[in-house]
Image (cartoon, rainbow, N blue to C red; front, side, top):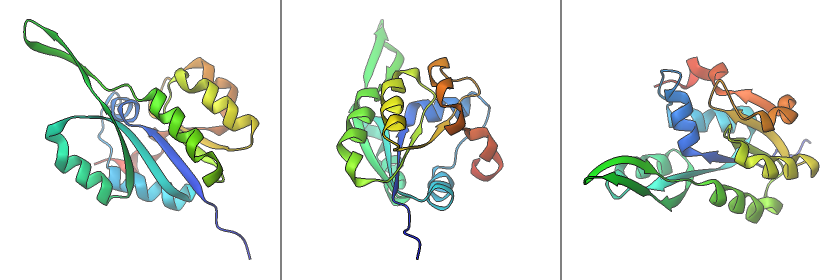
Length: 163
C-alpha cells in the first residue's frame, strides 16, 4: 500500500494576493486550499500575513478554510496623517517556520515568486524537500529560474480558483 504524502505549503500571503490582483482576478482562498490538498497532498498550509485588527472576519474565514495563520504586525507609512502604504513583510517568518517544520513534512510547496526565498528554496531542493514553487505573478525573481522544473504559475489554475 502506498504511503499518503504529507506535504506542507508555506504561503507568502501578500505576494499571493498582489500577484493575483496584478492579473485582474481575485483568489478564492477556500478553493485554493482544496487545490493544495487534492492536487499536491498538502496536509498543512501556513499562510503568512500582516495582522490588521479590523480583519477578524477574514482571519476566521481563512482558519475555517483550513489555513494555519502566522501573523506579523504591519507597518504603516504615513504622510501628513494619511496612510500611504501598509507593509507586512513575512519573509523571515516564512523561512523560520519552514525550518521549524522541516522534519514534520515530506515535501514543501512555497507560494511566492520572491527572490528573497532563494536560500530557503535552494536548501529544500538540495535536501530533496522541495515539491513545487507556486508563483503568483507572471514575472518572478530570476533567482528562482534555477528551479524551473518545480515552478507552477498560479494562472494555470485561474478558472478553478477565481472568486
